[in-house]
Image (cartoon, rainbow, N blue to C red; front, side, top):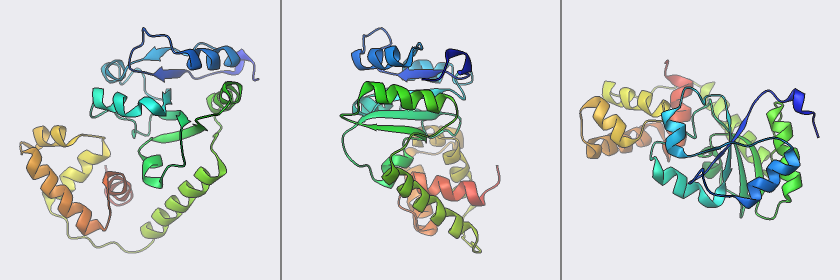
Length: 216
């Protein structure tokens, strides 16, 4: 285990109820020999600037409940590093990308002591990902790089470019609609056309394309 003095960043347990007792996280905290403060999705959103560049520890079993609390929970924001545990099965690449800047992933039956060891390495700047997950992400990003090396000519309208720029910030359909003074239905219609023009299947892939080809 790495000495306490070498820890420079903090892991926050992103959870439904910060006042509840989470036995598994308590045990991880014990093996880590370091406090893991709890924070709710709403608390994270309210103190977004303060909690940038922090590491979020997330129980995969509760991830849908967490994102339902705040629909635009910015897990895909590059400023948030994530550690996900209790993952029941191998995830698709799309599911992995939805977990944001993924630094650690632990299976459902992973020993808490092993999770704590991984967390310690992540705090000190390392990744702690299974080989299959690394292979999936490496394959995906190689594909992205290959695409960026070829000339890209896409006939996007000004409105579609605006929507892509909003997607990059993690905005929800409702936020985009409010910002651009259009309906959510219109946003969905634009997204359908954008996905079709870019030959992508989902928001994560559209965001990846926008990061490569649209200036901030």
